[in-house]
Image (cartoon, rainbow, N blue to C red; front, side, top):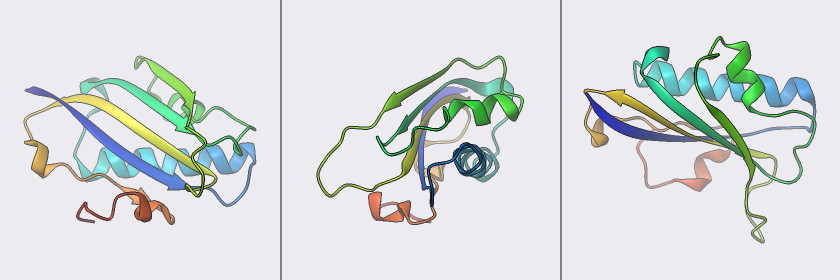
Amino acid sequence: MQLRALRGAIICSENSKTEIINKTAQLMHEMINRNELRPEDIVDIIFTATDDLTKEFPAAAARQMGLTHVPLLCARELPIEDSAAMCIRVLMHFYTRKQPHELRHPYLEGARQLRTDLPE
């Protein structure tokens, strides 16, 4: 098993607690399912959110999903001019037998624009 990193992002449609939880959970499920991850293989997860998402910590969704043993960290995304608004990004470290080219990084709900170089 090798330590690998997986990225993903999703765009929210509003700044509400429910929206942030639901969209983060959707992204996390895609990351885990597309890459056949087991919760016990996850080392840590870093979440970032743009300045316009203020009603909830994205990490709260991971806790609600049962990832209570995984260290989580939330941070602010850099406020770069003309960058995606209402965006949650995730960086997950985990152990797997998969090679880096086999990993599937989900960019959902309009976030695809952030990484058009990756296969869907």
